[in-house]
Length: 90
Image (cartoon, rainbow, N blue to C red; front, side, top):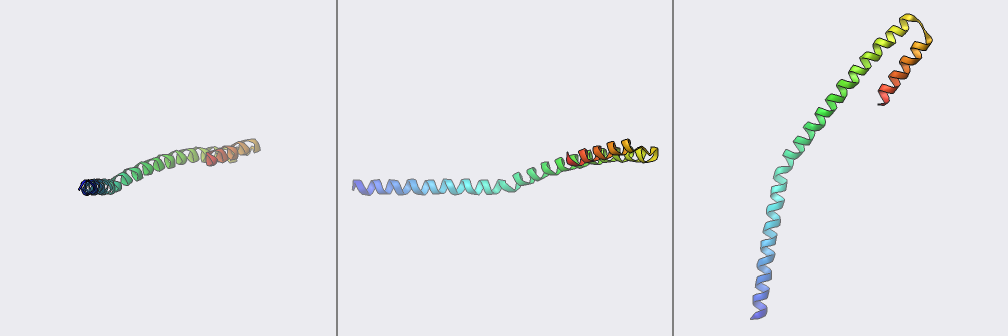
């Protein structure tokens, strides 16, 4: 009888543990799409900010390059290309 009670207690504990784990898994799966959506929105905002910064830098470089071409100086062209390379690599 003692063994039967112990076995029954172990079975009850195992069932309760399985129920708790199933509930935790269900809850995590339920929240995953929301977490993923928030992560994607953060990444999208960061990408937009980076794209805007790159656009501003390239627009400034374009102006400098146009000025260098108009002035016809080789040194100014070299600087402009170095700045463009630096902006692209950053």
